[in-house]
Amino acid sequence: MIRPHQKQPLWLAFAVHRMSGIGLALFLPAHFYILGTVMKDTRPLDTFLHWSELPLVRVAETGLVFLLAVHCFGGLRLLALEFLPWTPYQKTLAALAASLALFVAVSFLLNGI
Amino acid sequence: MSKLSVTKRGDFVKMCIWRGDASGGSFVDYKIPVSETQTVLDAVTWVQRNVEPGLSYRFACRVGMCGSCAMMVNGRPRWTCRTHVSKVIKNNQIRLEPLRNLPVIKDLVCDLSDFFAKWLKANGRFVPTATREHPVKKISPLSRQRQAANAAIECINCAVCYAACDAVEQYPNYLGPAALNRAWTLVNDVRDDGKRERLRAITADGGCQCCHSQHGCASHCPNELNPARSIAGLKQVAVTAIFKGEV
Ligand code: HEM
Ligand code: SF4
Ligand code: SF4
Ligand code: FES
Image (cartoon, rainbow over all chains, first blue to last red; front, side, top):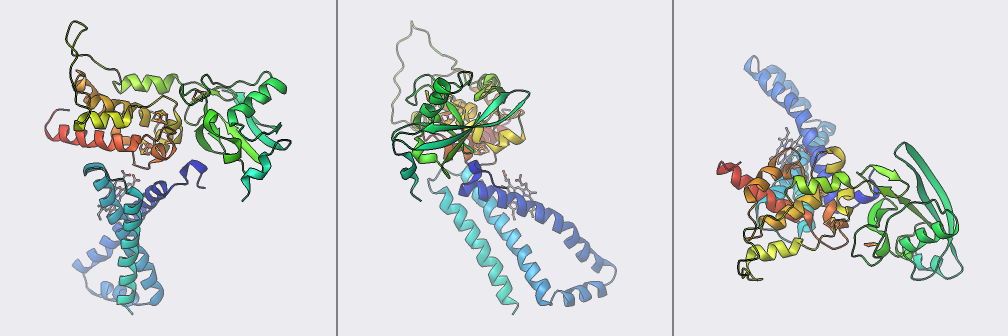
C-alpha cells in the first residue's frame, strides 16, 4: 500500500526503478540460459524463437522491454540528478524517462505486427 | 470537495489521537469544536485543556520557528502549529500520531536523541579556523559556495524530513536528510576546518550513499528546503574524493 507520505511523483519513480531492477535481475538468468543453449545445439533456441512469435508471448516480451527501458532511462535520470548540476524540473525529467520507456516498448510491440 | 464547510464555528471535528508509550498504544477519538483559523496544534491543546489533561505533546513557539511541534497528521509529517485544521481535514476527521522513524516516549512525544546524535555523527558541528582575535573574514554572498550553503541553512531541526524518509525506515543507521543537509552547508563553508573528518563521516556506514533520491524530505520540509539536493551535492563530493583517494 502506498502510504500518504509516499504520494509524490518521485517516490513513485523510485518504486518503479526498484521493481524494474528486481524484474530484470529475475529475468536475466533465464535470458542468458536460453542464449547459452546455442553453444550445444541450435534447435532449442529455434523452437523457443518460434514460440516467441505467439502474440501473448510477444506482449510479455514488450513488458520486459519496458522494464529495461524504464530502468535504463530512470537510472540515467538518477545519475544526472546526482552528478550533473541540479535542475529544478526533476519531476518533468522523471515523466520524460517514463514516456521514453513507453515509447520504446510500444515501438517494439508495433514493430512485430 | 468543500473542506472549509466543516470548519465553521459551532461545528465539530473528530480527532483520532494516538495514545500510548514505548510498550504500545492505540487511537482514541475526541470530538473537538472547530473555529475558522484553528491549527492542528490548537485542537490538540483544546483536548488537553478540556478533556484529557494527561495528553502529552510538544510545542514552544507556535509560529514555525522552534521545530518542536511536528507530528504525523493524516499520515504525513507536519508542523502542527502551521497546519490549519481546515486544510488537512479528511472525511471530517484528523488522525494524529507521533513522528515516524523515532522511538515514542508518550502519546505524541518522541525521543529525538538519535536524530540529534546523527547531526554530531555527520560532523554537523562548525570547526572554526579563526579566533575572536582575528579580523572578520569577508565572504561574498554571491560566491557559488556561499549560495549553496545559504540555500540549505534555514533548517530548524524539526525532523519532519527525517519522518518522511523511507531510507531511514529501511536502514535505521542512515544519518538522514537533516543531518546530511547540515553537513552540506559546512562542506560549502570556507571558514570551516572540519572538511576531512566530515568527508569520512558522510561516506561511512549510514552516509549519503544510503539516499535513494526519493525526495520525501524535499516534498515535506515546511521550510521548503531541499535536503535531497544537498545530498546529491554530497554524493558528488564523495565520489570525487574517492577517485582522488581521499577517503
Ligand atoms: C540499462 C542500464 C542501467 C542503468 C543506467 C541502471 C542504473 C541504475 C541506478 C542509477 C541504480 C541506483 C538506484 C538507487 O539509488 O536507488 C540502479 C539500481 C538497480 N539496478 Fe540498475 N541500471 C541499469 C541496468 C540494470 C539491469 C540490466 C539490471 C538487472 C540485473 C539492474 C538491476 C538493478 C537493481 C536490482 C537495482 C537496485 C534497485 C534499488 O536499490 O532500488 N539494472 N540501477
Ligand atoms: S531523498 Fe534521500 S534523504 Fe530525502 S527522503 Fe529520499 S531517501 Fe530520504
Ligand atoms: S530540513 Fe526542513 S524538515 Fe528537515 S529538519 Fe530541517 S527544517 Fe525540518
Ligand atoms: S511550535 Fe514551534 S514550530 Fe510549531
